[in-house]
Amino acid sequence: MKIKKKAKVSKPSSKLVAQKNELAMIAGIMEGSPDGIGVAVIRLECGCKKMAAVDKTGEPASKVVIYRDQADSICDKCKKDNGDFSRVLEQFIDWAAPEPDGATQKRIETKVFGTYPQA
Image 1 (cartoon, rainbow, N blue to C red):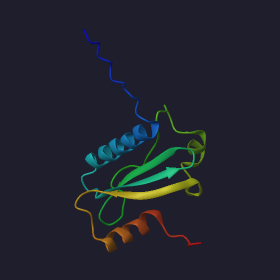
Image 2 (image 1 turned 135 degrees about the vertical axis):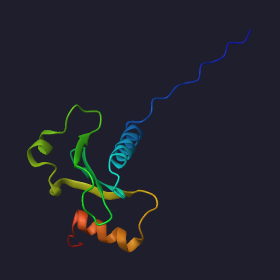
Image 3 (image 1 turned 90 degrees about the horizontal axis):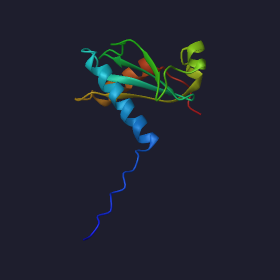
Image 4 (image 1 turned 60 degrees about the vertical axis):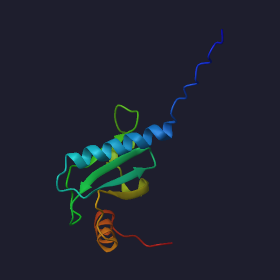
């Protein structure tokens, strides 16, 4: 009689879990924002994230949500400064299908995130 070895079940990486959580948050925000054409995502150096749906003119189509993966609440810095722009690591808009044309995307991104001098 042969004994079958059990397949090793690997635990998903924390990075993969964080990506899936972020995608779930984006989907939830879009679902609750009928005028939304995308979700602005701002990743902060502390690990917290700010998100909000944007409409076709670049105006907010939802409330801004600040959250932190695997945590009960946001960090103390974000509680104090509401996720200040000086602590931004990355920012982008996750566009819903069909995506707007490139010029429209650029115009909305500029309105949402502002502009800053390039080094």
